[in-house]
Structures are given as C-alpha cells and as structure tokens.
Length: 380
Ligand code: CLR
Image (cartoon, rainbow, N blue to C red; front, side):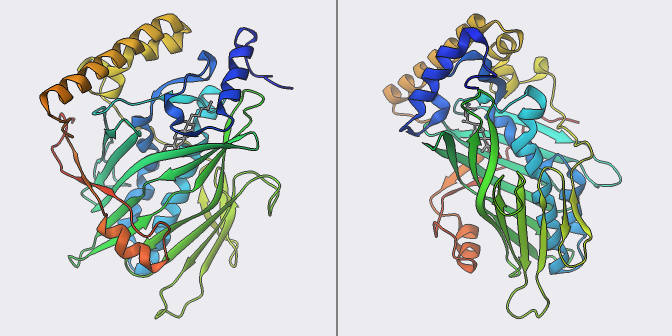
C-alpha cells in the first residue's frame, strides 16, 4: 500500500516529496524531505564503508602474483558492497537521506593494527565541493603498502518510480611491492536504483557494470542484477576476472549475491562471505573533535534527528547554512576562495586516463583529487 512505512502525520509531505522528484535531475541532496526519512549521518562518513573488513584490504599486499593480487582486490571490493549499499536498511530500517556535507567538512578515523591485518589503517575524508557535492577520501595501510584514493559525487534522476543514481568519480588503489614497484588499480562504480519509494521504505539495488582495471592488465568486470533478472534474486552479481592478453589462463568467473556470499563458478569454492560482522571505524569522541569534523559540526542536527526533535534539528541546520552563506559572501567580497586541507583538484587523473584506455572506460577521462597529506589531528 502507498506510504505504508510513512508516519501518518508525514504522508502528505512524503507524497509531495515524491511528486517533486518526478522530472527532477541534478542534486537531490539539497532537496527538502520529510523528517522520517532523514539520517543523522553526513555523506562524509560514507567512505569508511571501503574498509570495514580491514583484513581484506591488507590482504591485497599478501598476494604473491599479479593474478593473486587482482583476485584479492576484487574480493575486497565485492565485500564492501553490503556495507556501502544496505547498512542504512540494517541500522535504520530503510535507506535514508544523509546530511549534505558543507565545503571543508572533515571526517577522520582508523581501524587499529592487529596481527591479522598488520598496521593501522587510517581514513581521511574531506568535502571538496558543495555545489555539486563532492567527497574526496584516502585510506592507507602504510605498513602493508596499500592505499585507496578516490572521490565521489552523484547525478540523480527519476524514472519509473525509482531514483536513478549515476556515481560520478572513481577510486584508485595502489600496492607497493617488495620489489619497489607500484601496482595500480582503477576502480569504477556501479549505478544505483533506489526502489521502494512508493511505500516510504527506500532501498538500493545495483545495476549495470563496474570495472577494476589493474596496471598489470588483469581486469574485473562486474555485472549487477536485481530481482527479476538472471537469477531472480536481488543483489545478484557476476564478476569475471580476465587475464591480460599475454597470459594464457582461463578467467575466473564468480557468481552470487553481494550482501551474502558468492562462489567461483568452475570450482564451486566460496569467493566472498560477508555474513560475519564487519568492523566499524574508530572515531575520536565529539568533544575531542575540531570544528570542521563531521560529527562535531552536525552534532546539534544529528541529536535533533535522533531524538525526534525536528524543530531543534532545523534550527541547528539553519545556523550551519547561514554561516556557510556568510563565508561564501565574505570570500567573494575579499576575492578569496576556500582552501582545501588534504586534497588538490586536477583536471585529468593520469591513472584514470592510462588504465581507463585498457577497457575503454566511459568517459575516457575524469578529473581527480590528489592527496596532499597534511595529517589530521593525530590519533593514537
Ligand atoms: C555515496 C558513496 C558511497 C556509496 C553510497 C551509498 C548510498 C548513496 C550514497 C553513495 C550517495 C547519496 C545517496 C545514497 C543513498 C540515498 C542518497 C544516493 C553513492 C540520496 C542523496 C538520498 C535519497 C533520498 C531518498 C532516500 C528519499 O560509497
């Protein structure tokens, strides 16, 4: 039934939200939505999903051959999808509308070192643009020599009752080998469809194809299907890891559902299994955070949302927005621009250009963000 999951008092505001979506293209994050669908978490926290199984991230460095490392990268990537795309359903009952980060917003955290994964793994996130929203991130396990750098933006449209989200941006992963050489991987991102809107309980389905291209020539092609497609099950994928032309081994073919398990087609051996708990990132307590850190910055708003005090949430949100507007006005009056802390924008990402050619990436070039370092507040 329509609006089944919507609180009675918010049904009409949900309906008008859905109506305003029809024919809409662009930046969904700036749209006003009814309170029941608001999440207290900012989008700057989302890059943490890349590393909630830090041992799989670290294990990439343990691969003894080009093939073994490409295989490990694919396994780590597939194992992040459950967290990336279903965790709000698990923690809050449905997909929700995240807080729209402000320019310069930061999110820092880490996963502690242990024997299984070697060194500490750190995350640095910065909101590098507000209009349109773009989030840049860096994840490092320096002891293992595995580094992920990426940026994330979305283009949304509305079609057939669903929100279609094209992910703009990409990630690059580098592995420093004992030989001193560096292996690179270009990671592209799947398309999202947000279904269940009519009922007021949105959830994500992945669609189309994404790629992981290694500088060694190994290529993973990952196809996503939902209910009603090849297996009929939701969250289905098929990944094919193909060797470079000079290597004469047969490709690995993997099938399964990304939120549970998958198998290698020919051997029947389990490929990935995310039914065990993941490990959330460790973040400094709000009292110890700086002004620009996400949980500190949004604390008032998040508390309001969590406690159902939407008036107070709106007041705090209004303060943040006014302050932002004033900053932008001051900058244009002074002829200055906001300076990023950890990243520098580049028109063309050389890794994207070089590796994208190998599988005819579309688009053929993309911009990127180079990590500048400038370590955050140190955590121990
Ligand atoms: C951000 C990058 C992450 C993966 C990811 C997961 C969920 C996506 C999010 C990205 C972008 C913003 C998003 C969200 C789901 C819903 C939300 C598309 C791609 C939109 C802005 C809000 C929709 C509002 C309805 C739920 C009402 O690695």
